[in-house]
Image (cartoon, rainbow, N blue to C red):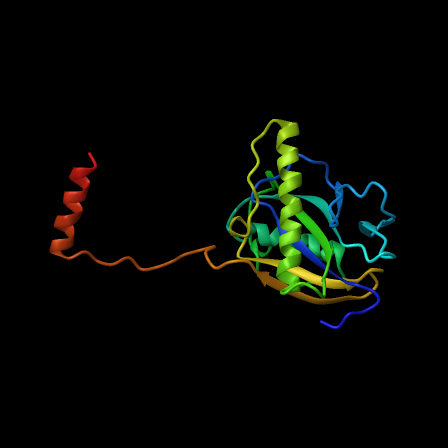
Length: 216
């Protein structure tokens, strides 16, 4: 990557497998230099974006903003559906994606938490986008664990494998006035498995009976 005076930020829209009991719009910032919470780091805040530290000293950071999105939980595409809703609110992009929102479904009866995760792309990283996502997931795990301790509810440790097959992402400059590179980031390949089962022959049926008897 070519190093520039103004860092490029990557924004991931991450639907969590388990909703967090936190207020819609809650924002958490982390300085990625060993201190968390950004207690003494200059903050940049506007109505359109979460607080971010200043870059006067080349600060590295991760910022998380929570979106609580109504959901009918009708299928495996639902997390991607609600992530797209957040993309349409936060960014100038209007992605045309076939999701559960285009189908008839019951009124919303649940909530999915979507994390708008922002962090810079670092020249020093071997794989800047993948490493940026790992930073975001580490901080999401931290917030999720703390939330579970405070609310007295168990919280799943968010990993790539627990998230949807793909999540929306895009890039922008620090000032937030230039958005670019809207795309879908693939996390893994085990989201949905469909296959045609093998037909058992006579020997197979006999073995099946043997296994069934052995498990009684």
